[in-house]
Amino acid sequence: MREWVIDSKRSRIEVRAKSTLHDSRSSGPLRGRVTGEPEALESSAGGVVEVPVESFDFGNKLQTMAVLSKIDASRHPVARFVVAGAEVLSRNPWRVRVSGALDYRGRKTAFSFEATGSISETALEARAELPVNLPAIGVTPPSLLFMKVADEVLVSVVLVASR
Image 1 (cartoon, rainbow, N blue to C red):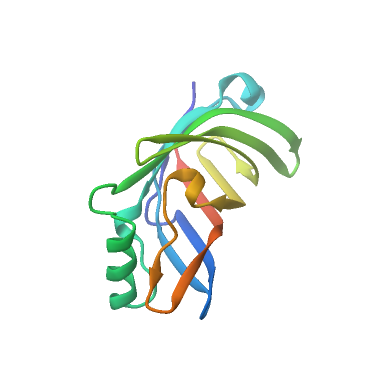
Image 2 (cartoon, one colour):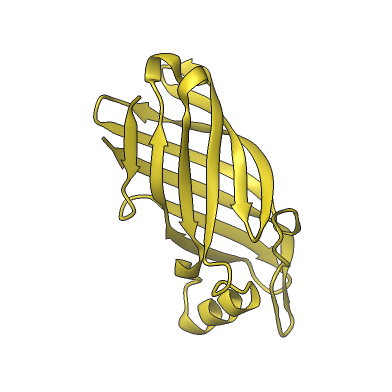
């Protein structure tokens, strides 16, 4: 079984949220490991991708501190996406439907999304974008003064890993 280690310096998650005053954007690193045999990905895909929520940056120090406090990141510092499977939609270029569950705040939420990228003997790169409903994963959308974040956010992931 091939295993790729996620490069936390090159892999990122970005969350874009609409709110009553202005849209906001936050980003953070990814870490973990993914596994699978490219020739038989449907029967071999697996791994765990960790999102260190406590490392999110909202663009300015005050907003970062306020939002991390509102979502209680000190008590729930890491979200884990456990890969359960993959369906290959195309091999050139690579397009895969990934399925799994996000484990966060004591709640497991099933997700399925399309990812594009490349796989070689030594490297794996993937990109995905998906909507995430915050209450569905156990997060109350933050509000600060007159600003209230919408329930649904758009999550973009860039994952770079090597063997």
